[in-house]
Amino acid sequence: MDAREMKIKAAEAALTHVENGMRLGIGTGSTAEEFVRLLAEKVAGGFRVEGVPTSERTARLCVELGVPLKSLDELPELDLTVDGADEIDASLRLVKGGGGALLREKIVAAASDRVIVIADETKLVETLGRFPLPIEVNPFGLVSTRIAIERKAARLGLTGSLTLRQSGDGEFTTDGGHYIIDASFGRIPDADALSSELNSIPGVVEHGLFLNMASLAIIAGPAGARTLQANR
Image (tube, rainbow, N blue to C red; front, side, top):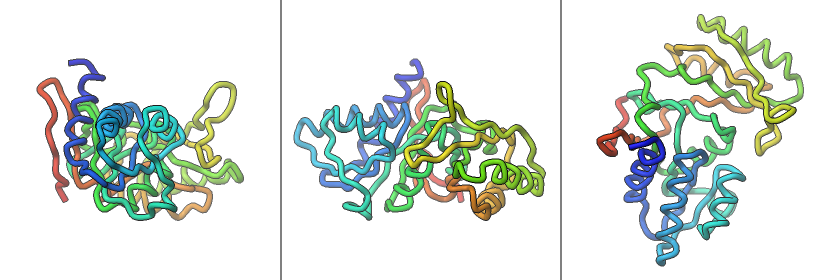
């Protein structure tokens, strides 16, 4: 089973949790896109959902495939969000933001009764931090914000490169008009403390630590998909 086949298996399993008439948050990324394709097939057969996309990229795919969409202002409370992740630990704490949609992903997740994460087994980690942590920042005061991130991280014993994400010939810009700093801290032993420190920096808009948000993870591997409950 190749990587795409594993993503499809996870998406298929997640779709069994989606009920007719649900208000659904729809995630961003390659695994979430497989979910959208499968969802669109059900919608074409008469299945009813109202979706809130977490990115312009996801919105375009949903429109192309015929999945009905609303804004989060129109549907401020959601039944379920299905999204991917860049890392998942045993407590279902996540690192997200590799696709650059972390702010909207977190807002949509927070508005949902339940969050199901879908991923292949390469995303499982013992401790978060193998994947560089995306930190969404305001372009204004970028240098000051970067220095503040370095200092806050150092207090927690974290070091590593802080790289401003690039796209083409310039800085990568999120749907909200912000930049992303990818922080290669390595192992993050206290994700809660790092989350609090980053939240205290005015120039940090949001970060990719999604803590205590996922209720279920569907992990696909060569043997098929399995479900993990939060170990909290």
